[in-house]
Image (cartoon, rainbow, N blue to C red; front, side, top):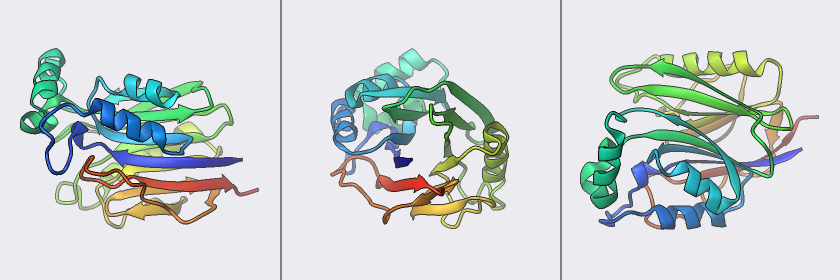
Length: 223
């Protein structure tokens, strides 16, 4: 089995430098144009996952994260003034899957304060589990407790099945015992079990979109 995994923090749909307008079409076209089988997305405007998936020909699983009270109002303001509203437009994480169904989707909260953080994971038709996180910054979690809680939840769901785990972990040197580190850039990292890296990790060109570089890697089965 071969699988290309992409992880990208979308910076709440903003650009650097600020574009001053809604960038859904640009993000959708960029994601659709890259080669990947599974995309782990963080800091996604909550109304974006479905159109992003449709543009890329993918299935989608989404979880809401923080600042989603009065979401219709937040959405209206964020679409009009994204660079003023920033993260107050609401947040979501999403897993997009090409060429496969999502038979199962699980989620678990790992923190309430100062931001609501969740881990979520999907089981693919192949039996592989893929988990996505956006975790707390080091000054709020110096012991990487969020990461440990998220990993425990995912290992419980996956059992002995092959597993990909990652996203924006907000740590430069994250610890994920039992998993192999297969790709990393700054605070974005990918780990795997039952799969190994088939090539060097890549940072696809994204132009001015987001303040995070996308991270992509090809994986193959260990056996």
